[in-house]
Image 1 (tube, rainbow, N blue to C red):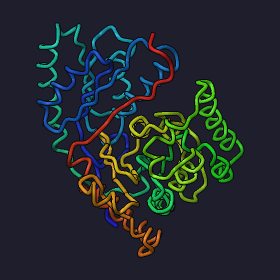
Image 2 (image 1 turned 30 degrees about the vertical axis):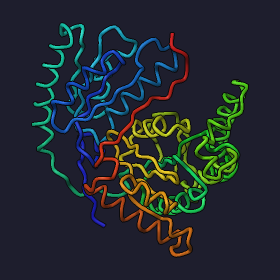
Image 3 (image 1 turned 135 degrees about the horizontal axis):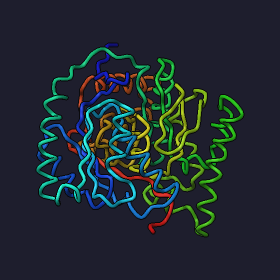
Image 4 (image 1 turned 90 degrees about the vertical axis):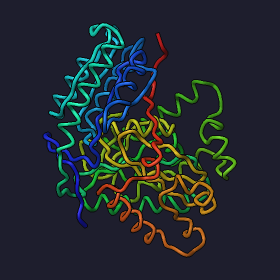
Length: 386
C-alpha cells in the first residue's frame, strides 16, 4: 500500500499540513482566533489554562501546548501570549522550534501594544508562513512512521462487541507493520487492568500500568462519591453499560492483543514502537488532546451512540458498531461495522476495512469531523486554579 505524507526536518512525518495558532493562556484566545480567521490553512485552539497553575499542573499544560505545536501534522506555529501568564509564549515557541525545526513565531500582546497590533502582526506572520508551507510536497512514507491514537466515546453495548474488537484487530495489524498505537482513558481500564498487565513487556511496565489505574481509582474514592454517572455516563448506562467494569472490558479491546511496551504520562511522546498506554482521563477531548500532543497523527474513535467531535490537527475516523446510530448520525460516522452485530461481517473483515480507510485518510481523504470542522481541544487539569 502506497502512503504519502509531509516529511519534516526532524525526520517525523505529517499527514496534514496545518498552521497552528496556539494561545498559551485564556487571555489570548480571541486574538489567536482573529489571526487564524485571516490566515489560510490555519487552525486554532482555545482553552482556559496557562495561568494561576502550580507545579505539575502548570508543567502538564506547558507540555501539552508544546506537544501540540510539535505534532508532525503541524507545519508551522504562531504562539500567542498575553505577557504576564504562567506559561509564557516565547519559551513555548523556542521549545517547539528546537524540537522540530519548523517555522515558529511568538506574539506577546502586551509587548506589541494591544490586541489590534498583535492581530495585524499575526496575520502578516501567518501569510508569510503560509507562503512557505504551501510549497511543501507529499512524499512516500511508511506505516511504521505513524502513531495512531485510540479513543471511544458515546459507547453502548455494540462498542465492546463490534467496533472496539474491530479496532483491536486493526491495531494488531498496525503494530505488526511497525506503527505505534496509543491506548488511553485510564478510568476506562478500571476492572480490566489485569488483562493488560498480563501483556506487559516487563515487570516495570506492569507495575506502572497497575499504578496509574490504582491512582485513578484513588482519585474517585477521595471525592467520596460513586464513579457511576461520570463513568459510565448516563448515555452509556442508557446504552446498556451498567458498571465501569463492563465498560472497561469493552474498552481494552481497542488495544488488540499486542504486548504493552510502555506506560507514558499525559501528552508525553512514546519512546517505544507497538502498543503504548497513555495515562489520560476518560473525557474524550482531553484524552485526544493528550495523544495528539504525544505525536499521534491520526485517531480511531469508536462510538455506539454517536459523537461529532474531532481534533484541530489530527484526523479522527469515527467507527460505529450500531447500525441504527450510523443511519441516524450518518453525517458524523466514517465506518459502520454494525454488520458484525448481525453476523454478516467478521471482526477481521471489518478490521481490513478500517485499515483501508486509514490508508485513504493518510493520503488525504478528509474524515467526517474534518469536513464539518468539528474539533475540540481540552487540557487535562490536575490541580485547582490559584
